[in-house]
Length: 145
Image (cartoon, rainbow, N blue to C red):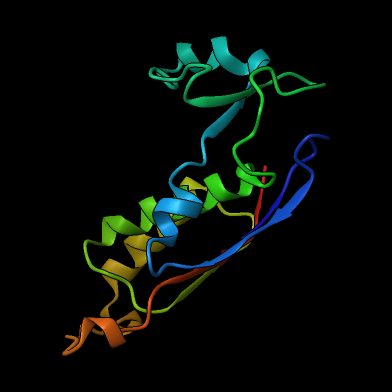
């Protein structure tokens, strides 16, 4: 995943992960969502960020992270990968393959899920005799904020 942001603390980040052997739990799940303090009131008025706090989200202003330290140097892009994996889970099946996203977000992810579910020519269902030999989802993507 490639993530570009005009915010100087984020800049351009990329991340690629193969989801095997607990890599999701170690490399993706701990990545927190993030937001900007100056946008918090407007987001709450829209019914968003209801459960957000400085304990479970990275909060920034224009100059700094207000609740350091980051869990990973590239925590922002890792959270974007977490979002992508979560949105693809709406398909309801394990995905065997690779996903590359460039400047994606929830709207693009859910549009992809809808399109995949609507058009069976995009996928085939299979069974695996030996799950240990099964290829895992590889996620590599680009995202811009």
